[in-house]
Length: 237
Image (cartoon, rainbow, N blue to C red; front, side, top):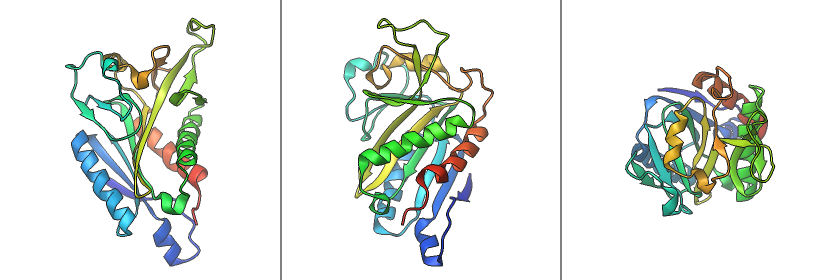
């Protein structure tokens, strides 16, 4: 496990303490229950003012999670992998090796109590990180997450260009501190997504950076995420 400080430009030591974001990277596979326990404890500490904000980068073993809007019929293979009820927003998602999970514990009390804007910032952060690999991410009305166009694939039944999902977003707030967050597909086993209807969407597929033909590693993505975080979130006084 390695720890690093987030980017900040503090004019005073007091503001430096307020703005510090801990970046936590865990190697190997982290159990889902363990991750949730850490997030809930850290979010409570942030709300109490006893801990800094935290971005946690990790990978999970193969599993499915059900958000607060999950429909049981969208779990098409319930015996395939463990299924965890999650209190985050959204529907069913898959997590597994080769997917970078980014748990985001940030204090919206000082970042503006605007949930819609916060989700937009998370989307913009993913798009900015993907842009470092010349991948253009898109946000689509009615479809949560970040999408990439696939002009080489057949068009949809409506004649629209084919698109695949490359990143999922689902958060929870407690006392205006966020937890849960983002998953970006680097090189997961895409077939594992067939056990669910990802986010309740059947007309579109799922892709990854490697599936797009890019030899991107997890470390490469981590560097891009660190670099683009300051660009998107900036200072927060």
